[in-house]
Structures are given as C-alpha cells and as structure tokens.
Amino acid sequence: MAFQFFKKAFSEKSHIIEATKPASCPYCGIELEKIPIRKTKCKSCNKYYYAKRRPGEEEKRIVTDQEKEAIEREWDEHQFIKKWKPMVGFNDENLSKTAKMMGSKTGVKPSNSEIIWELFLEKEKKTRDSQDLKMLHFKMALFLFEEGKNYEEYLRISHKVDLDRFMDDDYINDVIVHPCELCKGKIKIRMPKKEALEKQILPRCGVHEEGWCMCMYSWEHRR
Ligand SMILES: [Zn+2]
Ligand SMILES: [Zn+2]
Image (cartoon, rainbow, N blue to C red; front, side, top):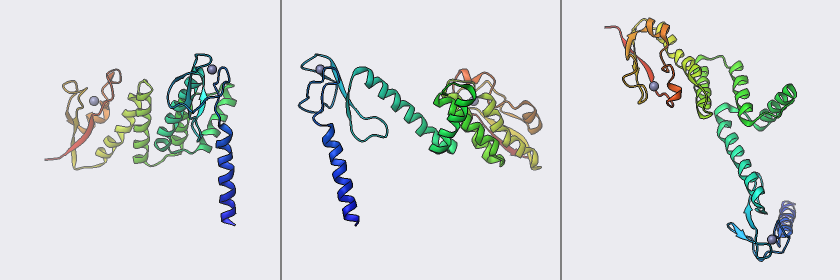
C-alpha cells in the first residue's frame, strides 16, 4: 500500500518535472537547449532571461528581467517573515488572520512590516509576566530600530522592569549604568535607585539617531 503511494507520488512528481522541460525563452518562446544557471542571452531574440525559484516552489522557472525582480522581492518578504516569526511567536494562520482583519478595517492591504507590528501589539495585550514583557518590549524596540524608527520608548519600558525589581530589593542601594560605545561619557553611570527610576535614563534620549543602544543597568549592594 505504502509502496503504491510512493510510486504514485514519485511518478506524479517526475511528470511535473518533465512538464517544465523543455524550457522556452520567456520573451520569444523559442525552445532552450538547457536550463540556464545564470543570466543568459537568448540566441533568438537577444534578450536576457534567468532561472529563478519562487519561495515555496521546488522547481526553477525561466523568467524575464521584470519577473526576476518580482521574485527577488518575494524572497525579501519571505525572509522578513521568517526572521520575525520566532521573535514574535506567530504561525501562518495568525499571520493571515491578522492581515485579513487589518485589510478589512482600512480597506488597504497592509505591508508585512505593519502586520508584524500588529502581531507584536496583539502579543503585548496577552502578556502578563513582567520578565516576558521585558523581553517582548526589547524585541519590539529591536524591530523599530531595524525599520529605521525611534525605538527608545520600547527599550525604556523594557529596562524599567529591572529598575522596578531593584526598588523592591532593600539590599540594593545604587544603580550602575554600563554604557555602550554610543553612550560612553554621555551618561551618568551611578545614582541612587530612586533617582534612576525617576529619570529612566536608558536608553539615552536621542540615541536612536546614532544606532542601537546596548547600555545596561545593574546594581550595587548597600555598604
Ligand atoms: Zn528569446
Ligand atoms: Zn547606550
């Protein structure tokens, strides 16, 4: 039984591969002797064609210059989703559901970046544990940074979890700031914990225009 199934699947698959051969020029339709590995000039019409695989497909197809660029954009989008999927913690179903909801609200198809951000906000609403929120807000800050946006607010509330924890600990007196390369010499590195909580100096104001701030809080015991 299993053998029959595999035999069938195999023959169907090889049929698909057969069907794509012989390949032809996407411009003039002339039959090609072989599938090109790289950019190739058609001997008949002198235009360039390419062999490209789309995300989710197994076989390469012979495409025009314009189609090649569209496929490259598809790959960028695919990689973008793949990167943030484990960071936010969503699956394909969440993704399409949120995209559909956003689209019906605004009447415009949302970009992948807008969908990811919405998924972050949905996750934020469901997260209760302060350490989980700290991690989530850190990732949201990182996302904004990579999108070229101001990430300071999200990194600030992520760091605040540490300050709140220090406030609850009677043995902790002072907060120590470990400045990153961007903030060295521009930030006060030691202060009473109460002052640290009032000022919330991490990340330093305006640092998002300089890059990603890696400053960290730590603490010192009462002497
Ligand atoms: Zn041609
Ligand atoms: Zn910094």
